[in-house]
Structure formats: C-alpha cells, structure tokens
Image 1 (cartoon, rainbow, N blue to C red):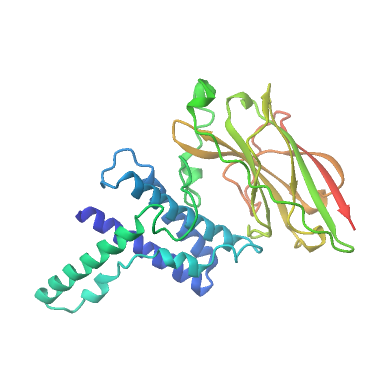
Image 2 (cartoon, rainbow, N blue to C red):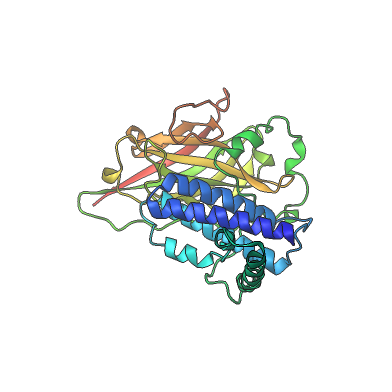
Length: 334
C-alpha cells in the first residue's frame, strides 16, 4: 500500500504541474508534462505483472485518464480544437492528494491523526475515481494495447528497425489487436476566393512493406516551430500491401484554406505501424510537403528517418533507393 500511495502522490504532483503550466499559458511545457504522465498511466494500465494490485476495472479507468490527458494535449496543439477538451474538464479528474502540504509544521501526533483522516478521505476519492463506467465523468475509452511515448523517447527506443528479424509480419493477423478506424475529418465549407486542398494518399514505397502490421499515416500541418495549425488526422489502416508498396487510396481534406496557412508551414505524413513484440505503435518514417509544392496533380515526396523533425532542421533520408510517398492533390476554389 505504501508504494501505491507514493505512486499516486507522484501522479498527482505531475498532474498539478501540467495543469499549472496549462493555466499559465505555457503550452509547450504543459503538453510535455501531459505526455509524460499519460505514458506512466498507460504503462500501469497495461501492466501484466499487477505489482500494485489494481483490479482490471481500475486499470481501465487509469487508461481512461491517460486518454483524457491525450485529448487535452491534442487540444493545446491544435488551433481549432481547444474547446473540445477544456482545462476545466480535465481538472475534474484530479484526486485530492495534497495532504502532504497540509501536514507540514504539525506536531508528530497531530500529523499522524491528520494523515489518517486524509488517508480515509483520499481512499474514498480514489474509490470514486476508480468506479469504472459508474463515476467516470467522460465518455472515453482507454487506448488499446499501445505504449504512449514521451517527447523524444522514440529516438532512444526504435533504431532497431534494420536489426529486427523478418518475422514481424508472420502469423495470423487475428493474433494482433485491430486498430480503431481513422480520424479523418470532412471537407471545410467553401469561402469566396479561398482554396481548399484535398490530398489523396495513394501509396508509400518501403523495402519491407509486407511486414508492416496495421500501418496507417498521421497527417498534420505544422508551422516553422512545429506547432499544429489544423487538427491532426489519422488514415484508416492501409487497404493492402503489395511487393514494396503499402496502398492507402484515401483522401485527406486539409482543415484550413490554403491562403490562411502561415508562411513556412508544411504538411507532414508520418507512417506508423504496430510492433507486437514491444506492444506499441511506432513511427517508421515521415515525409513532408512545403507550401510551394501545393499544386494540382500527382506528386512524389521523399521519406526521412525518424524521429519526426517538425522543425525540419536535422533531416536524414531514409534510403537511397527510389522509394517515395505517392500523393495526388486536388485544389478547389470557390
């Protein structure tokens, strides 16, 4: 119980730190802290050892809290979605774990009595928070079987792509969890004199295309500082894999008129796939298209090594082979 108590205190401290950054307008720091806490919660929710003796329902609730942290983080990074999940909503999840501050400067006896009262109160709060599907204030679901990585963590974990054996794609597809469908958004309403951009993702060339499990592409529009200018969208899982290509054939409607995109903006395409041995979704490579490349018709763009460099300062080509991301652009002007 003592270890669980310490862990809950750490979670509460991290939560308070993140929401403080959020309320002060320090959005970059808030996003980083939300990611770090979400990673720890997701790790606990997916733990197979159950060293902390959480029930399965409690683990689901911990996973739901991690999902809420992700939703708030996504809202902060998108100029159009900050009303979707507000800071006030997130604070409804905060457990009352600040009793340590109130215990300062008390005598040992009074501190002990106060801690006992606070412990009883806290366990009631935790009991309410962990009442899965009864007390949880939001209709969200835990992210299934996916490790959440803190910013920059992928860079340290995933340079083994070339070293992994060829069995990543072996076995029945039914042995792996099915990914939730993509998060594509509808086309924006037309405005006089404004141009809408639809990008059809046709296919991506990879030497090990057939071994990628549940591949999909995350599409985002970033400014020069790597900040989202539109909501992030995920494609559905690829329609088929053939030879050295993963085929998507899906349309992405960019969620801002071309004329309203800031100077130096770029559209990013992150190719992701599921790694069953490590039980998380990994970014394999990325590509991007700058504003001067927005033209009607087909275009092929180069692939770069991970981690995704949204600021475009340290780019490394993924391969010297003629393998690219194949797109087709449609511009609509009212």
